[in-house]
Amino acid sequence: MEFSAQQVASFLNGEIIGDPTVSVHDFSKIEEGQTGTLSFLSNPKYNQYIYDCNSSIVLVNRSFVPEKEVKATLIKVDNAYESLAVLMGIVEEHKPKKNGVSPLAFISPTARIGANVYVAPYVFVGDHVEIGNYTTIDASAYIGDGVKVGNNCQLHAGVKIEKECVVGNNCILHAGVVIGSDGFGFAPTDEGTYRKIPQTGNVILEDNVEVGANATIDRATLGSTIIRKGVKIDNLVQIAHNVEVGENTVIAAQSGVAGSTKLGKQCVLAGQVGIAGHLEIADGSIFGAQTGVPGSLKTPNQIYQGYPAVPAGIFRRATVVFKSLPELQKTVFELQKQLDELKSKKK
Image 1 (cartoon, helix red, strand yellow):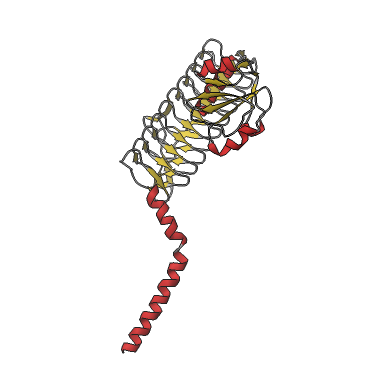
Image 2 (tube, helix red, strand yellow):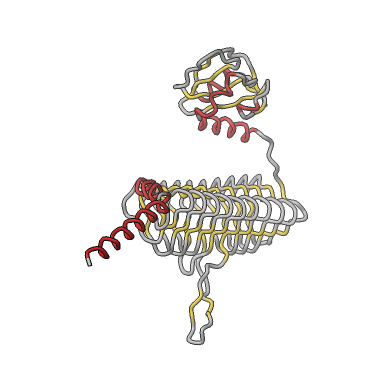
């Protein structure tokens, strides 16, 4: 598709600085911009690239003031990064979409398939499944008995949704996602072995949830594991049985949340965060990379780092001290030596 600067500005309620008739047909990074493409600038670290950028249009924040001449037409918006997402979403919506059911897919006679659904080859759809309108299911996906999938969802290649799980509207499950595998429940016996506890619950994904490639969300022992609306989960994340993830929480790659923990709304988990089981995490909690959380956190809108998790300010100060420990140890040893000498002389 091709858009003029005037059209882009109207979509985004932006202000044009330059030629309103210039047009673009693709996107590019600002450091690799080419004629006929649109780039964006939101991070000041990349300001240097805008002066030599060959992109025809660049989205910038309204606060941006160039230090010298810029060749590209600028469109000033409230938030360049968010505006880029809006514009790319418009482009995606206008791309032609596949529909129809491949003859190589298996669909149970008792399944109900909505309008304008696409089902690729080698998809399995079990008994009493419900698939909403405009949903796409890519090759080799497995949809177990009794599963419900809402409207306008995207299930990528190899997605597995086990029996009785529920996926809301406008959800995206990337390749290899597993929804509803058994929770890790085993009861120790007197003989030193473990007896498996049947996992009889399910998983519920509310609307507008996105789950990254090869992430896993376990079914509940009883009741439901619940991912609230707007949650975004990165690749290789593990969500255990009976966890509840609050609205619009974001979880980055390789993080894990143990069983029965409840995360609040608007939380942020950076990469490799680990949260222990049976905890309550307050709304707006933010955890830096590799933070370990062994206990509940009840104060909202706090930033944590380290293991065990402490407020980020304390962690930064502790890190400074930690780097000085070898010298501090040397000083302590020297003081101890002097003290011993003084004691010896006193005797």
